[in-house]
Amino acid sequence: MFYCMSPGYAFDKGSFVEFTVRPDPENPSLTRDMCGLDQDGKEIGLRVIEERPLTIFLNAQEIVTVMTIRDHPEYLALGYLLNQRMLLPDDDVTAIDFDPDIEIIVVRTKRKTDYEEKLRKKTLTSGCAQGTIFGDLMEHIEGIELPKNAVVKTSWLYGLSHKINSQPSLYLTAGAIHGCVLCQADRPLIYMEDVGRHNAIDKIAGYMFRNGMTPEGKMFYTTGRLTSEMVLKTVQMGIPVLISRSGFTAWGVELARRTNLTLIGRAKGKRFIALAGEERILFDADARTVADEARHHRRKGSSAA
Image (cartoon, rainbow, N blue to C red; front, side):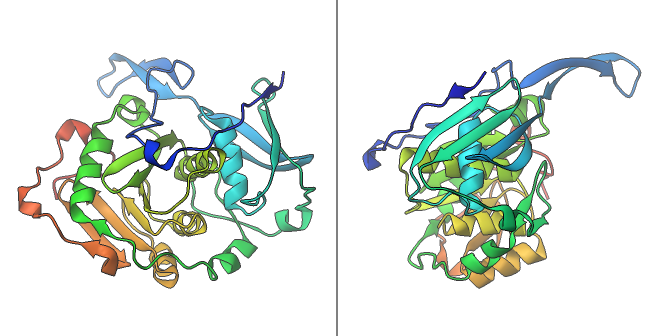
């Protein structure tokens, strides 16, 4: 049975609060209790992330099937189509129909669409679950100018790291998942998780589109690697700063430098490394006064080194 997703609403610019959207680790549909044996042969119970297919249609055309936790299917579908430039920022979305039984979501627009030719020219990327970049996206980002006057304060980095990693999440409950957070200054606004980091960023793109949020003054914080795909999607969305707890890929750094994106990785506790757009960083906090990350809040790959 298809369900019609409700339309979004326009945000008042002054209404942003921290964690307007946040993970729901207690949602029983997102994890499953499973039993097994540990290294000593003892029985052990474990909460495991649910992973489901979702096939996205744009009007009558099948576009892609992604693997997802499927907590916000409408935002994922909208964001994916936006970041692949199949859905345009000024498109009139007339309906979004979701059928969980047959695992299909259909985005319907007033504009007639046909992307048969574009679908033949796709490149699989390093993204988990489903990573796809279409050739014309590379050409498109060359014409995007990110705001040069954007600033990221080191005090914001430290504040965001503490708030985000103290927030209850599916990762801290079950692991095997990535998170992406839309931030403004030291405030985390929209926090999405999914089995693929690109899914999480797409869900934020869809949320922004549905709710009339603009990229001005925004930054991304992610738990995943700073790959070419993450850089491309961030630039495509007009956001000038991308921060990660994880490391870099060489092509991701190269693309960030070409597009004037500030790229900050290995941001854990008091430490971080910037490899692109360093001129936007304002060193307003003394790292010696910042506490190390609490061990129970550390994620995959975190260490004291």
